[in-house]
Image (cartoon, rainbow, N blue to C red; front, side):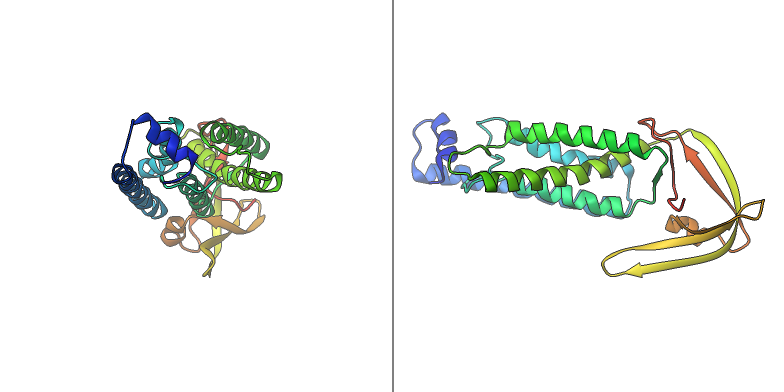
Length: 250
């Protein structure tokens, strides 16, 4: 039953009958299904901005799978090959893809984009090392092409996850305002698409008469402000030292 990795797990439990092995597998699948349902609920609540703490729990859920996969005695493992025991790799990939969707709905302009990308790259590398530690990827029967493809896919997803997670950490909680500018709203507009989130725009005018067009704004700002109202654009320090504003038009 299962491959050599499953057999290595069962060997630690002593002599087991096929029925006992099947009970272990059924138990592991129930545990993983329960965790998957909880993570799906966290994503849905995060998607609708229920609470930043809920969103934080969603991002951290990927490390739950890494933790459950770390020990050789774990019922849930990260496998690149076929196995009877539940495979946590697919859950990790799905979480990282979903985190990219959360990033699409963030209206953020990082003033120091170089610092932001350097932190994202460093965090991606740490996640990649963690995957190499927990995953059983270097198998004799794996071809170089397959291994390269899996590693490339994993790192790409980790990079998008890191972009979303680092962005979240930088803007999480109370922020100190380092700069504030006042504008007059001279036009409002929005666009919607089935393939992506709705975007809301303001055309803004400065005191000197300069016009800033198509400035992305959060939907709450779009709904609460009217043409002719004053609009404040504030720049915050950021928890990671990356200054940011809640708009990304300039």
